[in-house]
Length: 335
Image 1 (cartoon, one colour):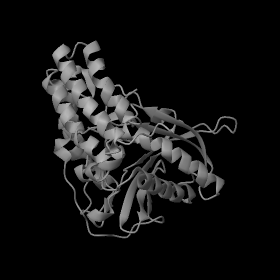
Image 2: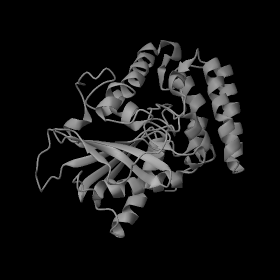
Image 3: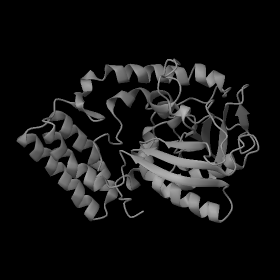
């Protein structure tokens, strides 16, 4: 069940609601950059003509070469759809440095190599040559990711062939993680992707939108964030969404999702939708971190990665979210 850390765009993301179309430059499977110490690799993959997806691999200094216990790779898939894994997932959640580029005391890099991607194309450093090339469905997003993984794991520079892989997805990324796992299994059976998929982990998964919206009101009341009147209003809106989903009117259901959040905020003292123990107005720490992250990704990190001037990092993309809105409310529990 969704624990209310749902995949909508919060107010704090308003800083990044932009979209740019840089001129095309030479990218592809062969365009792999590495750090001087060999612990990082990154690049763009042309997942489709005119669609360029960015990836960034961090290798752990703690790696132990034990044939009986292969050192894992974690593929991190961020939510949204349309939030950046290389930025938000890396610097604000599990990577070795925070948004100020200060070392983080706790990082998953101590236990595994980390592979971040900016997916779907159009978010983070990933971009498309034309807005018509933005991803429109989950299946297309998964196909793009599979294409990227195929090239990254076959690269002689990354040396990842036949390594152990775990997929970990957050929110909408968890939704895609399930389908991607199935796609990877098919690709490995076809011997087109040299990797050993060992597991898929879902966090705050957006795989049953109907259950998530229907549980919002009761959950908020349990934590005393809304009263009976507020519960009635939230449930009324949630049931309208349920009705649209039942009619397979997924676009109509998606159109009601943001109004549902407005109803929740208006009846809960503006609860923080990412942490129901806080009010959104108290989220100054998160807002400050996102401001620093935007400056970092378009400043020091962009320079470090030697990215062209006409590439800009986009933390959260409204066009990406809008293009996938039809699939946003479709269930994925059968997979």
